[in-house]
Length: 199
View (cartoon, rainbow, N blue to C red):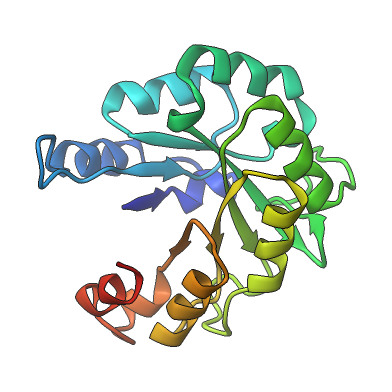
């Protein structure tokens, strides 16, 4: 399960109580366990540590990863690549963090992906922010470009997924995963139907 705190991502506060409740409700190992990946404006070592202590299987570091390479190094050294992912929110191939510029440099998303992979990051969550929440289809070409430009990088595509065909296309593109939000909320398909497309 991917859980994102959009209020924190957009600088409008945080939903810590909801996050903790979701993590407490997730079935623990052994199977059928549920692994929960948490993101949304996560920008400090303390925030990553807190979410992991609450029970997150993996934390998605936000725009801070683009401006603070030593932060990424420290988090990888402390928690390992399996427990840390990095969000790459982009528009027209350039970094475009949610909630405004947040001090991020005008960096090409593919260049950031390459640098993160060189640092040891294994997984990124790529979102074309122009498509996010639109049900207009995901940017599979952009996601695939990141994977192709950084050998061994696992890319999860997010933003715009509207149909089961979108999920099938993401799988056919060799991506590590796809995040579905609005399409499930609006019952475009069921979770069972979505899972059947990707297993």
